[in-house]
Amino acid sequence: MIEQHISEAGQNAIPLVRTKKALHNRVNRRELKERMKNDPVKRVTLSFYKYSHIPDPVAFRNELYRWWDALGVLGRTYMAQEGINAQISVPEANFEQFKTLMNSYEMFRGMRLNIAVEAEGKSFFALIIKVKDKIVADGITDPSFDPSKTGVHLNAEAWNQASEDPDVVIVDMRNHYESEVGHFENAITPDVTTFREELPLVAEMLEAHKDKKILMYCTGGIRCEKASAYMKYKGFENVFQLEGGIIEYDRQVKAKGLNNKFIGKNFVFDERLGERISPDIIANCHQCGKPADTHVNCANIYCHILFIQCEECQEKHAGCCSETCQDFHALPVEEQKLKAPSMVFNGSKFGKGAYKAFRKAGGTLNG
Ligand SMILES: [Zn+2]
Ligand SMILES: [Zn+2]
View 1: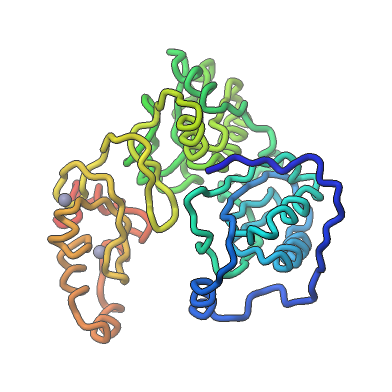
View 2: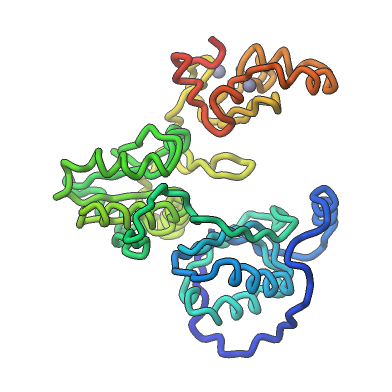
């Protein structure tokens, strides 16, 4: 990830033509994917988020959609009254124009753009901007909660320094399946499946440590913006957060040759499911218990449960989470279709994204 801030200058008029095109994509996904594969246009893949009050998200969504569509921007973006969260790709040739455009909005000035270094720019093939209730679901209903009153942002160096203080509490604001494969040294890793259930839990856990410094971190920083504001809302005063999350921390540690305090893998929500940060393997295979930290989705698409599987088990069970799935997966596709509605898999029992099945089954998915 390269850190890039939208320049403060950018006084040039935008040589942009706003088209009167439809505000939604009308071509089917397979066709778009095929088109993208053959598209010679070089693209910059990036992400950004910004908490800022947007009074009319639908109107702003439509406005941004027209501009971005004219610039050939692709990707997935969420917009809500509390702000915006975007994962997009921009044609390289239009990147300066894109920055000028974004800079013309006060709320985006000086914002960090996280640019993916190794991405091929083929991750997206349509432009989707969705209006939602919240950009990060938090379950907070109190209208007096202000997500802009965040904690103090720390860069990697300041984070390392602060975390050495014996009187700090380090909290991982991600879910159990993320912290299972990697976390900061001495961090508290709450056993939760959603951010929404984690917020009140963490405030309760730390109630006795109100006098201490609270250091929070997450994958890319967006969850901690809200989590730190929530802790302050709950009366905590010394609240700090890792700026740009583990992704930006890792980049700074490598670029500046700092001491790395993150052990294991950083779970990421794309097809890789994890980036190795340190050589340590801190998790175990959910089937045989051997050290392993590779997340996979069960090969049986009707199950698809996310779990950790070692290479041996991957081979032995054909990438499946259980014997039921393995047997089912071996059936002809047509037979699977007919039988699927009457079957119960780990994924259908426990949710596709969460492998609580592992712990409910006493440590093994096969049992
Ligand atoms: Zn195994
Ligand atoms: Zn399965």
